[in-house]
Amino acid sequence: MEIFWYLPTHGDGRYLATSVSSRRGTFPYIRQIAEAVDDLGYDGVLIPTGPSCECAWVVASSLISLTSKLRFLVAVRPGVMSPTMATRMALTLDRYSQGRALINAVTGGDPLELAGDGIFADHDARYTLTDEFLDIWRQLFAGRTVDFEGQHLHIAGGRLLLERGYRPRLPIYFGGSSPAAIAVAAKHADVYLTWGEPPDQVGEKIQQVKRAAAVAGRTVRFGIRLHIVVRETTHEAWRAADDLLKHATPDSIEIAQHIFSRYDSVGQKRMIELHKGARSGLEISPNLWAGIGLVRGGAGTALVGDPAVVALRMKEYAELGIDTFILSGYPHLEEAYRTAELLFRELRPLRKPTDIAAAAG
Image (tube, rainbow, N blue to C red; front, side, top):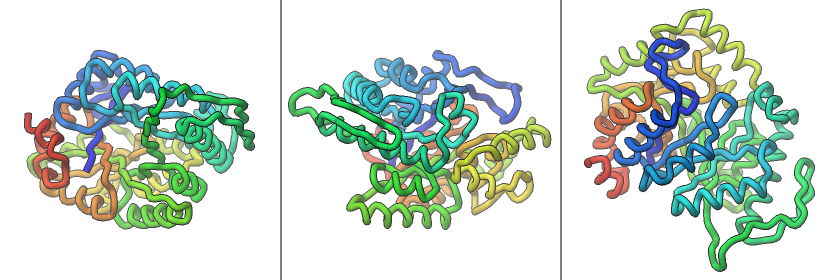
């Protein structure tokens, strides 16, 4: 089992949908989180992408010399980035970090945000573009000179200057719940990512991707993106979860849901369906809480409970085939410590010995 944490470069806080006790995603703050996560024995960090975030590539680069083991899951954006330029950036990050770069291929699901980056293709066309981007990506990393003409991308004589005998293998992480996304995942993903849906829905999605990958002659690993609220007792954990929405008003929830409704992301629609914009009935599966999705786009669910019960729920996902957990909590600095101190011991049988030693100090 791999456990990643999240770097909130768009800002952080103790509560959701409010400026009360909020924190800016300054470099000193992000550095504190990264250094703590590295020391605590997490396997890596997800660095977010988007117009409200700091540049993920600059953030990762700035943290190389401040960390020793931490891997950086950094986004490439097909259509926003040139595939040849993206491979050079990735190669440099991987070399300078001594093999700690991981790639998150992000197609995007908010048409308004995408338009701000000059992308006006519809949903399925964007996944065709992503397929072309990753075709070029893999050929470049295989050391080939690339001549490619697709529906969206045209490359003539593209090359990646690799050292003799050096063939870096940067795993591609990729998510998406639509048929178009699953087709791309089956062809290109090393790790397919899902948001934290109930186990039966996650299991169904895993089987879809496995079948599609088998047709393509490939196998795929699986990861899940979840928030986490772990406390010494389950009662304390549920109280802490409720406290996250302490300052969320009906108006703030309505505004957030209106924004999310414009997305053409199937995954976002599935997140909305879990809570339907209502504050009642938010425990959608044992210890799985959909409250975060009322006011936050993307991953909107959290595992809530004491260490034993949270570990049990994670093991249930692991039994479905999930081996990478990308976790987060508010605020991210304190919750990185709390999660490691309370939860890692419960997960000891599923983690690598080096991770256990780091978490034990």
